[in-house]
Image 1 (tube, helix red, strand yellow):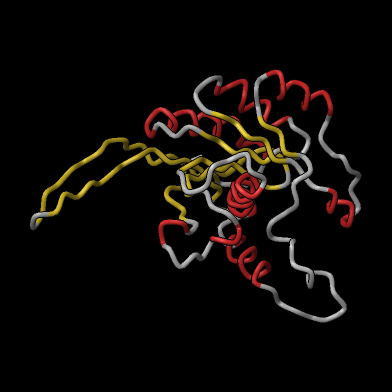
Image 2 (spheres, rainbow, N blue to C red; image 1 turned 90 degrees about the horizontal axis):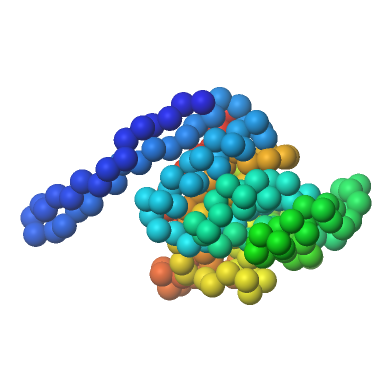
Length: 218
């Protein structure tokens, strides 16, 4: 793991404008995967303290990763756990997929659990159609994949939380995702609805504010 270990705010005034330069500690991992989970938790805890962000949205298929975050973060932030919807059965998995033991623990910890909300990037009626078709959802998903599976997932769970009505839009939150299991990526992003990702009002669009942690090799 490599860290960029500078955390301070520098303010400058130039030509009548107040400019703020923020230097923070970011985590970059040599390999993607669940072995990075504890370091991502550490990075998120620090960023919450620095920014005052009030919500963390965690991708957690069975609930284990969300439990780890909830136990580690305590009252630092509201936590939303996002699992898989019924569509996962199309890929050969059983559903419901969340472990009931982890789900009960999350509820005890006051975590909001989403385990039925549909995917955002697999929502097109043409995804599995008989016609060969590239959809906007596929293009957006593949663009995010260039930054890693965890990056794409971190964005998607925030969009799902807003669309499900458990997260207010147009605020900065932290999204956490991983590659298959655990967590290896965390981002600060502006929460928004899937339908407003490219809104004509720029204050409502999706924006990636900061990368807190991510793997260098995807």
